[in-house]
Every structure is written in C-alpha cells, then in structure tokens.
Image 1 (cartoon, rainbow, N blue to C red):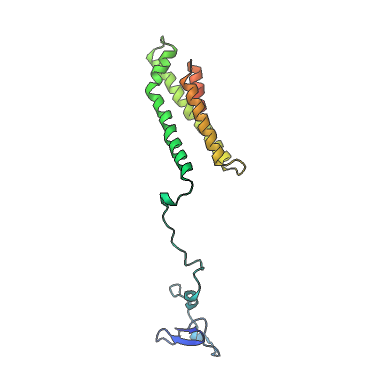
Image 2 (tube, one colour):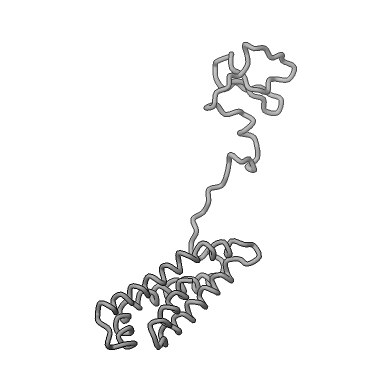
Amino acid sequence: MLSTVQGEAKRHDDNPTFTSIHEIPGQARDASTACPSNDKEVDDDNMQRPNNDLTTEKPNKPVTWSSLPRKDQLFILAFARLAEPLFQTSINSYLFFMLRSFDASLSDSTIASQAGFISGGFTAAQCLTAVLWGRIADRSSIGRKPVLIIGLLGTLVSAIGFGFSPSFASALFFRCWAGC
C-alpha cells in the first residue's frame, strides 16, 4: 500500500495493486491500482487526524464518591430514602395493637381486616398517584427537587397524623395520604 507523507511515497507492503486514496502527486490513477473497500483496512489519513475524531473517544472514568458534586444533597437524599421505608414497614409491628385501642370490643378477625384495609389503602394510593408524580417531576417548570420535598413533607404529615389518629377512619385517611 502506498501512502503520501508530506509529498513522499512510502511502501507499506509488496503488493503493487493496492494503493491508498491519495497517490503520489502527478501520478495518474487507474482502476488496476484502486484501493478495494475493505472494512478491516484503516485509511492512512485516519491515523494522521487529530484526537478530536469521534472514533477516538476517551474511556469514561468510573464514578467515585470523591468525584460527585454536592455530597450534602446526596446525604440528605440517602437519609430520606432510608428513613421513609423504616416508617412504612414499622407500622406492621404495632398496627394490630393500635387498631385494638380504637375499639377493644372488635374481634381479632375484624382487626386483621382493618389492618388489611390500612395496608391496602397505602398501596392503592401509590398506584393511583405514582405516574402523576412522575410526570410532574419531569416537567421543566416544576422539576424533581420540589416533588421530592413535597413527598417528604407529605410523609412527615401522614406519619404524625397516623400516629395521633383517634379512630380507624382517620388512620385509614392518613395511611392513604402516605401513599399519595
């Protein structure tokens, strides 16, 4: 293969039928000396291009904790992400006793049914509102931060309201609010 480097011709191999796209100045080019299109061959001009070519991308460095910006915000997000499931799952351990305190005359099966309604109310509210909150968060006019803050404030209010509920109806209301 012949290539031109600043006006000089250099031979890469001993096969005279294959030449590069750029031939020696002043030399005629015919079909017998044309370079065949082979995907595995690299054009000599590509090797001389600067590194801003799309084919020579720099490998991405792995993301580390020290390379992340705003670690304080990430810490708050991680804390909220760990605190909310703690509230959501801790209810199961005292829900039966809370419902019994509302009305001690109820049978265990009725209290278990009420506990199922409270747990189902949370799940149903989440199913009905999750897509809506996702669309609101994706809007450029609102964004994700306000939605996260509203969600955390809603969890705070629903947890306090559920904890101080005097009846099954108010407990169900606040548990559904937690799912919204």
